[in-house]
Image (cartoon, rainbow over all chains, first blue to last red; front, side, top):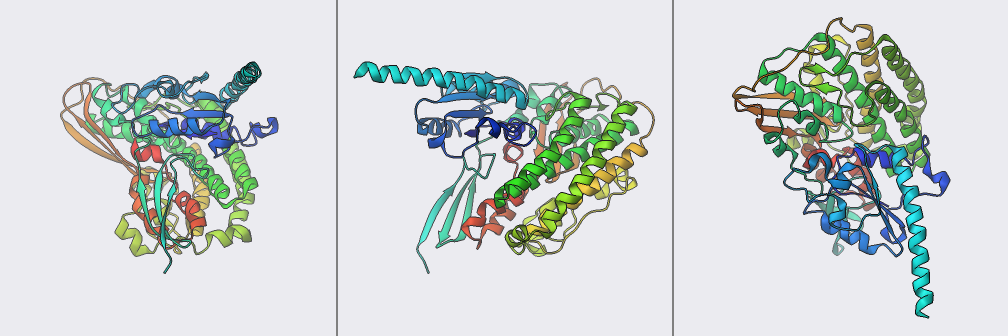
Length: 138
Length: 359
């Protein structure tokens, strides 16, 4: 799933470009869903501000465990060029835990795909940990 | 009369890559009123003009929006050049026109793709975006960036193009024209596209004038407010405003299809008639006390730039008035009386760029 916090559109369009014929992540079984309840990986572009921090938090809370957050673009990592702006709180990690950071302005589609693949490893580890905890509690 | 219900639309919505929120007041399935609320992408970057000097500020201004990034750079640079009393070389101006039109081609292709996606016509979406990637390849080969290029600077453009680069641009234009001829037919003739687009979201000429709509939204209703009409450089390159009179979604779509074709011609003319000379002049010293306004026709419509100098290296104000901001009243007007299933498509037809709107 993808949500634009306060990005300039550059990274959002690159996230969408990953779906199109030149990059075509769907052949690897990756799809962009609009529904947080069906999502495993949460791509966030752009920094957080006062208006959208609740939205980001809510979307994150609606996703089922295990889940992975990928911060796409330098704004989502640290605030980037907008760090000094009065309405920017900083990177996405100010609000929700971030697992993978993808730098770049704008992040290239190759970098985004790489970030998602790294996210898949993290997802697998989290899934195993959840399973072990479940077996341990039996 | 049915009972009224309120359906929230956004900020996170599958049809929109960007966050905007609408409260839709429905009577059965018909929208009675749409109340937009914005602010999800507000960063406050105009304020940064006080902290960065006017030469560095262009990097911030380019990031007003990642789609029409070049146009924002041009608008800001043009305003500062006006304030400083600098005249840029003709070659730089011509290269700016060329890059701006390339941006328009990729922005309109992106929009056509999003529209197809809004219609549920996924393969058409893929085709439009496949064609668009060719423009991004040109950007990357010339400037090193696919989206944010930093090609424009205060005083001209950052580098000159070699004859090989110009040839590549021209070849790409020819290739895109070939592809577009086939793709445009789908938008013109395909019955499933026409059924959804023709006659929906009609804006009359009077509505457009009352609500001050700009860009393809206005031109789709027969109102010519294209800023390029006033530019001598554009006129010499064979620019004519493209107007359609029906005012529905289909005519807004056709304005953009035709503008792609025209932009390709303008780019080829610009390459053929590129003046010789330098591509930039140095701009140094403090910005004088005073202000200046500059207008650029962005892919989404007229954008307006204002800068105010205070005798130091920093500007005391840099302001952008962006086309989406102006088109939001037109959008709410279109939404009145439409069917709920058309909402996402109608929102898309104004080509909303929320990060421009909120900055």
